[in-house]
Amino acid sequence: MSKIQWRQDRVAGVPLNRYVGVVGTVEVGSVDYDGSNRFWIWSTPLQEDAWGYGTTEEAAKAAFETWLTQWLENFRPFFQLDP
Image 1 (cartoon, one colour):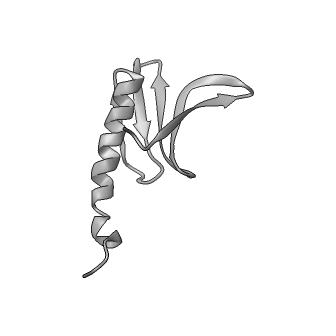
Image 2 (cartoon, helix red, strand yellow):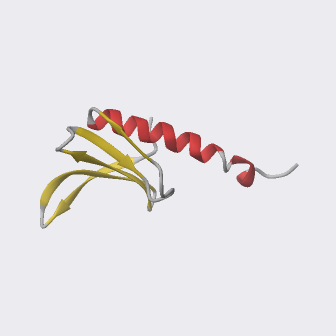
């Protein structure tokens, strides 16, 4: 089960084809529909050059979660207590 909660973005009460993913109070990523290319793009504020895409909203969210999990593994030694 995903720890990311996705909420649909809105402007002036109008729902957009954009979802923002949060864990707790931290925004970890977003998924936006690119109508000109007809696919969903994921990106993250956690790393400037990290992005990807999926053919569906669900595929883009899954791809983002896979990337985020792998990226966070780099920080595991920092958060582990030394014996």
